[in-house]
Image 1 (cartoon, rainbow, N blue to C red):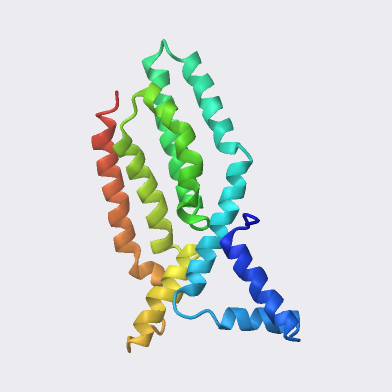
Image 2 (cartoon, rainbow, N blue to C red):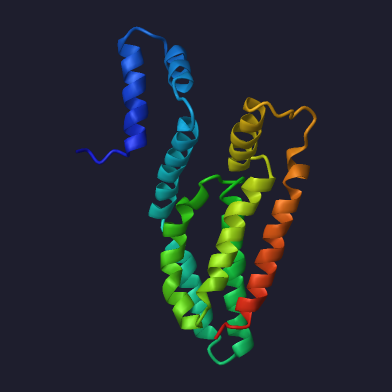
Length: 204
């Protein structure tokens, strides 16, 4: 009724219940964390960071970015080279945001409905190939967390992948997860490069 985010409500309710029961704040938080079984911790991380991403969206940064690009497009209508450079700048920005959303500012896919919709009009004006945009986003979203054990990569590689291998009797002693995942990550890089070149020829 108060339009409170569901994850915030769950956390506030859990902490309130522990405090009312006479537990200390530290004990309440420990009980809450230890009570999250299976993939609940991962789900809670995603949901909490999703709420954070919504807060970023409220700031209007995405709309500001779109306005700046539209101004650039308006200045460069007469030059096909300038228009093409704006296209690739958009691709580079989206890829950089996707890459950072896994490790630097781990909000995962929550940035897409915040950043991409304001840019759709810009993409239409530039006659951009949507496949190239999708390719850049997919590469940026998947490759960092399947290769770099930081942020969501730490959750996936250490708490899911390595933990499941160990739980099923696999020996992970001395195993370098980055070395093991280098080949799949290289495959993503090659696939992104090849598809990006193919779609790049379709732009306009």
